[in-house]
Amino acid sequence: MTAIDLPQETARLLAQLGVDKAAFSNGARLVRTPITGQTIGRVADADARQTAAAIDAAHAAYLSWRLVPAPRRGELVRLFGDELRAHKAELGRLVSLEVGKIASEGLGEVQEMIDICDFALGLSRQLYGLTIATERAQHRMMETWHPLGVVGIVSAFNFPVAVWAWNAALALVCGNAIVWKPSEKTPLTALATQALFARALAKFGDAPAGLAAVLLGGRDVGHALVDHAKVALVSATGSTAMGRAVGPRVAQRFGRVLLELGGNNAAIVCPSADLDLAVRGLAFAAMGTAGQRCTTLRRLFVHSSVYDALIGRLKQAYLSVGIGDPLVPGTLVGPLIDKAAFDAMQAALAQAATLGGKATGGARVTDGFAADAFYVRPALVEMPDQTGPVLEETFAPILYAMRYDDLGDAIAKHNAVAQGLSSSIFTNDLREAELFLSARGSDCGIANVNIGPSGAEIGGAFGGEKETGGGRESGSDSWRAYMRRATNTINYGRTLPLAQGVKFDIG
Image 1 (cartoon, rainbow, N blue to C red):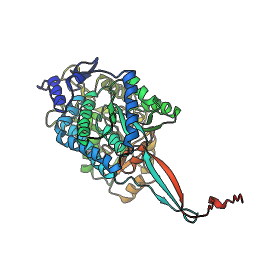
Image 2 (cartoon, helix red, strand yellow; image 1 turned 45 degrees about the vertical axis):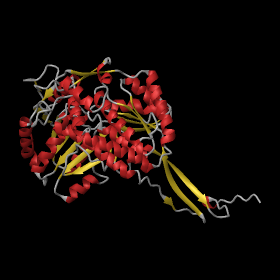
Image 3 (cartoon, rainbow, N blue to C red; image 1 turned 135 degrees about the horizontal axis):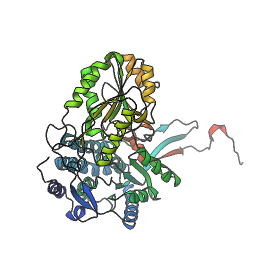
């Protein structure tokens, strides 16, 4: 058990990050830390009037922000990145306190925010359209990209600030205003991030009021954001069930959605794989963040020729990995977010056992921990086949391992789940690697070779297919989701030829 007074430590960090004490101490919604289960804050939910006012203010801000040159908009994001650099330690530690991430992962999340700010700054001078070949003489055809409007961001607890930054940095340089509804489980990191952004706004000097807002609350606030006609794009990260609710509501008013939903991610280990490398990659992918990443490794297909050797080594890792207070150096696995996550894990393990699954680990670790904190030993479950809970995403550290003999069969089983987020193959056979990356291979939005499926750099587009939602965030050309495209044709001649050879002569 930590000797640190966590409520006092939280208050200290929030004060250093510029959050008014009243914002985290006077509300009716309790905020708890999964490290001990203690209450570390009390926040107030936004009501209907406040929600509508924030969206209206954001829309008014957008109307002027869209006229600011994109490189100038990039300067605001650069200033925000500077604030993050200056306060990385404090914000990273607050992430650890509110989510239960180990120290390096808390800091790593803030580094992701810094990285996307750098990316967006460069992007502000690269919002390119195409010049398109036209069939008509003395004509030019091109595409241009314009700001979209208000971007509503709904984020999940497991990456409480990084995923917001992926959206916010790009949305801002693209000329949009942003309204953020964070997870009700992690409002304090949202308040801290907004305070740092306010500092950047003050240094920038002439940004319109209402450009960025945070709305704390539960489903009612989320519904109001999703349903508002002035929210041009809703970017929502969370469960598939959440996506099924959000998608139709936005579609009903012909708004846009960017969905980042579930992931039942898998890896294949081939006979030629470097097992030293595979064990390291698989262990982090399956156990990192206590299995609470959307890219967490949840299914493992191992060739029969290396199955015993690999699984034996993984079992040793599962039994020896450091579990405990995430603020203590040497800890690799911190707590689950809450009791509901623990209960879901135990239910999945029980179901797997009825189907012949044999588990290593999986039990709650209670020695030295508070009664309201839920620490578990990660579970490695050897399954006879892919069935039952293996086909579902359980947001906890459970890895289901299965044998295979034919790579084609392994790929078919790999793809035989509803989600399609992240995947990987461990092999030193070029043909196997290329097959996995081909149209006949992984059906996921992310497909890796000789690294695990968990984690992603901001330079690549992040997202997946099927019930993962189809959205793409962060790098590559993901910026296009935050803009609207116009096709333009300019006639610089004195005649009016029509496309496709159509003749329309009025004399």
